[in-house]
Every structure is written in structure tokens, then in C-alpha cells.
Image (cartoon, rainbow, N blue to C red; front, top):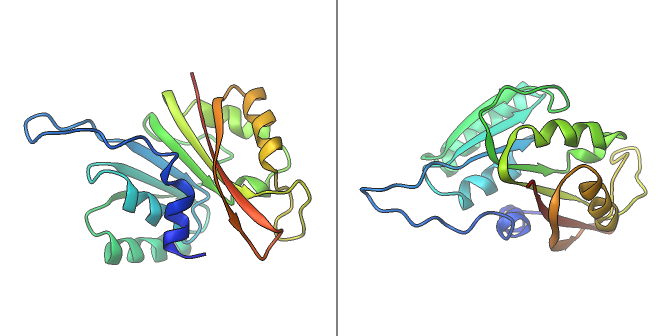
Length: 186
């Protein structure tokens, strides 16, 4: 996949652009990319969110975050990104978020419900969770615990998310294909 693929996978899950004027700018949106790795989807967020948005790129690999920061400065120098070396399965210290993006990160965890319960507490009312995952319930050693879109619908409802909808799909040479979906909290 390349940058246009990443953008396409998440575009429809982001809020419509807020109308602003120089005298009345919209409050900045705050989004987090959890398990951001080398930042492919953090770059997609920077490409799609308004210029005054804040992005929290959260990953366990400090070297990958530094690499991501260099790429961001090169491609989106005006983006406001915080790089946080942390494990998203543990409590995070971030301001209330308008949205969370999890792209190919939830499939590393067998017990997803406790993680999702903790993440819900980070979102503002009406906050969005965009999930990008392999569309299968059978993993391998590299993708141990994927979940298909129907499984995601069930899990999202069970963990208090609402309005879950499929955004798009993407063929993949690994495990057949991927999906992106958005869910909100009440």
C-alpha cells in the first residue's frame, strides 16, 4: 500500500471539514494514531485533517517515531504532531480526543475488549474510532489475532461503540484483504 491507499482507507471516517473564518476559527481537532509504527497512517491523518489539528502519534518504538517525525517534517511541515513512546494498552495521558485511528495494531492483542474500554475513556462524546484491519478471523504468526468486519461490528457494539459502518476495503496479498470502519461513542 502507498500513501493514497492509506488516505482512501480513512478519509470517509473523518468529520466533514469545519467551516472557519479568520475571526472565528474552529477549535482544533485532536486525533491519536495508536500503534503508529513508522507513521504511514499518521501521515494520512496529517494530509486529511485541518491545519490546526493536533495529532498524537503513539507507538512503542522510539526509533520508528523519530523516523516518522522526519517524514512528517518533510511531507507535512505545518502538521502539529506529538510523538509519544507508549503502549496504548496501558493508560495514556492525552487530552480528550475527537478521534482515534488504529491501523493494523489491534490484531496483535487477543483480548480486545479491555483495550477498547480503556480507549473509550480517551474520546470526547461523539468521538470516533477508525479501525483498519485484515478482514479475517484467522491469523498467522505476523498477524496473530485479526478480526473480520462482522466480528468488529459485534465487538464494537459489545464495548459501547455505536453507528459502526464499513468505510471501504482494500485487497491485500496478506490474508486476502483489509477493511476500514468507523464507530462512535454516544
